[in-house]
Image (cartoon, rainbow, N blue to C red):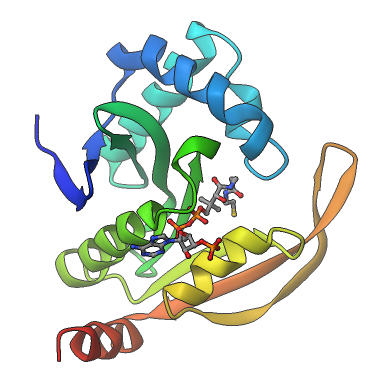
Length: 187
Ligand SMILES: CC(C)(COP(=O)(O)OP(=O)(O)OC[C@H]1O[C@@H](n2cnc3c(N)ncnc32)[C@H](O)[C@@H]1OP(=O)(O)O)[C@@H](O)C(=O)NCCC(=O)NCCS
């Protein structure tokens, strides 16, 4: 199966319904850290619900409306990056991410999302890549900034989750901005 190297022993790989048990084990390691921000990591509770999430993303991939990949570190599944929305009619997509805590603080997500945005913009003709994060989620906002995204605005108290009405910040990067940034990186 293909893998894209993220450097330092990290890889981006597909994750499919037959890997539900391994996915669940990873989610159990990630839940406490990611649960306040990523409902998927709370909603996956057993092998059945893990398989359902992976099947949902396999179906989205087949329909070209979303995708999910695993981040692996030295072979272990340590995180996920996904297109929650992938809308070719508006040329707009939304990226979501999480890690288990042992894999945070190494730049893995920034590098993985760069691969996703490159693919979305250069191969798939996406014009806009969105990133939604609670105003309270400083690490996630840090990723959006690191990727050179702009803060479009705030959907005030739009996301009730675990007893908190989160203000959701919308960040985005547009294709010409992304290309300019990549060109500057390679100068
Ligand atoms: C959001 C989340 C994925 C960010 O993870 P992360 O590891 O901080 O993000 P990155 O991969 O971009 O890594 C950046 C960190 O690695 C450090 N780093 C180390 N080596 C690096 C490198 N080679 N390149 C870039 N950053 C590097 C950076 O300094 C930064 O750490 P700092 O914020 O303490 O300065 C993670 O905190 C998480 O899973 N949170 C819970 C779930 C969640 O909130 N998901 C997002 C919902 S919107």
